[in-house]
Image (cartoon, rainbow, N blue to C red):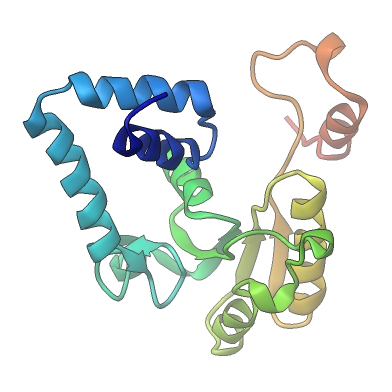
Length: 196
């Protein structure tokens, strides 16, 4: 129905996560209507990020240099490492301005059914960081999903004798109503209660 180049653009856009065929068509038509300068600016931004962005050699975060800005920051607490699944999780934690340690990005979560085993993640690198010494605590901040919980349990077993291992707290969201909370979330909120 479309010219081959437009159809190819739609196919490529539809490969993006969360973008179906209709959204891809809308995006393609938007790009066709945009000025040449705007369309080329998007193209240049994609090319530049693919050429310049890699992974931090220490933590696995996105970086333009060998070390990301967090690992290069001498003010960070090097005795505390927060383990996350993906760089987007790191960004969410950084937005809180509450965590001042370092990070370790696994690159996903364990999922044997999907073929993701320990050797597919940056687990060996994490263990090596801890074994080098100076790490007093590893905070496991994997997602509260079945795969995230399995990953946290696996990491806790691997690290327990080497350093203190903690888990990100879970429970009720601020502003939530008890009547709408599921049993697992409510149970965790009860188990994680603290003194006031």
